[in-house]
Length: 316
Image 1 (tube, rainbow, N blue to C red):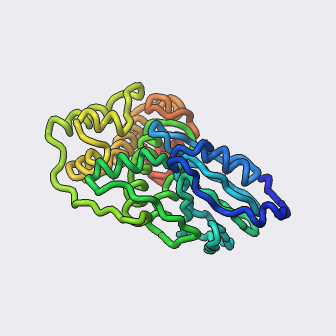
Image 2 (image 1 turned 90 degrees about the horizontal axis):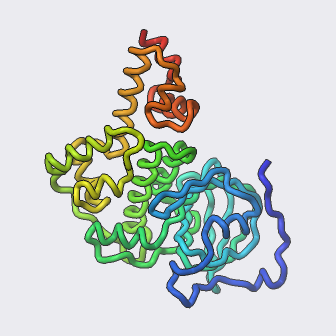
Image 3 (image 1 turned 90 degrees about the vertical axis):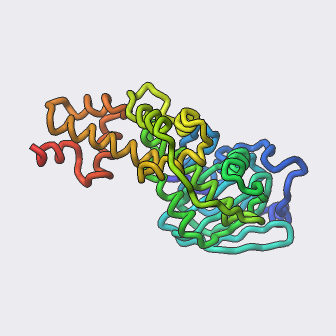
């Protein structure tokens, strides 16, 4: 059972309001996961951190009446099966909204606000370093990353859907899921720059795909064994492109994102092994780089609607 936090606000709490640190916002010292654990009075259901420094965490928490202290990363969140009133006091300004599916809340790094939430919340949070926003802005040739806007239960189904797509790939560190989470962080950073800053960024339409040599190198890396670095950074470096431009050029060339291409390739490998060999499912999972048979089974079922054993029986 989740531990909830039930607190009666003290007079000091009631008059404590939001502030922005004097230092640059992204140099604030508190890691978001630690600060969230403090104010929510619980630990995340699941959390995973990528090589870019961004993290995705799934929380379930109860009633909240507290001040969120400044954090070193931006926090972007959306809600799962929740309908709950939110109140956020920033200085003399009181913002309110509703935590519900399709809505997002944004806490820019370095800001501090008092929050009042009257009941249970099921929430998915992205912790996005400011350096990632700056890099994506530079790679996309935009004017720069303007300050993020505070959002409180703001309706944005596109950003919400993007973040919600991480739910099924929070467990484990298998290469396919890791590549998806890296790609997702890039997409979310671009989306946030385009709609949730004081000066929204605009992006030029993609023009041209990868050169034949760059495409061949990317395919060779994606087809290689599980010991090879399949990170988005490594794929982009092979092509001498930024991660932002590599993703767009790869999709222009293949019709698929790097993650979707790798997923299709792994599914084809798994199907061949299941149909044409008597290898145990656990051995096939290991051969394809999955951390466990259950992780492989869950991924296979998401793509086919069947477990590996069910698919094998039907295919023979």
